[in-house]
View 1: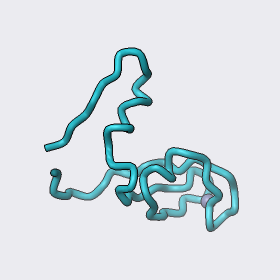
View 2: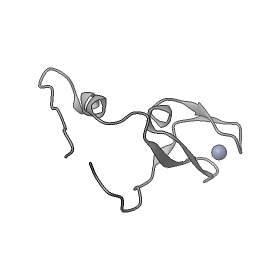
View 3: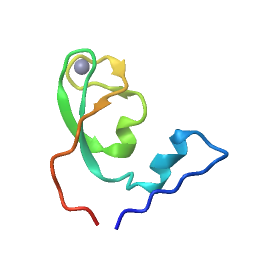
View 4: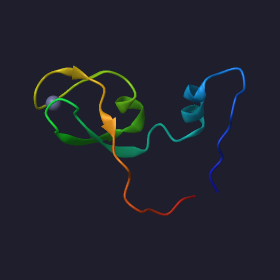
Length: 69
Ligand SMILES: [Zn+2]
């Protein structure tokens, strides 16, 4: 059962604090299109793309159907 906590004082930004930051997700480099897998927490910050070496914020890709909870 997934718990999502909304914090009125914060922005939607706070939402992800209730998710599993260590969950491995797929992200796509907005510059070169390279798809990489990394912990979600890493994709929420600027990262150096291993392909084009640009400092970018990866675009989170929809995760494949998986069991929740
Ligand atoms: Zn790239």
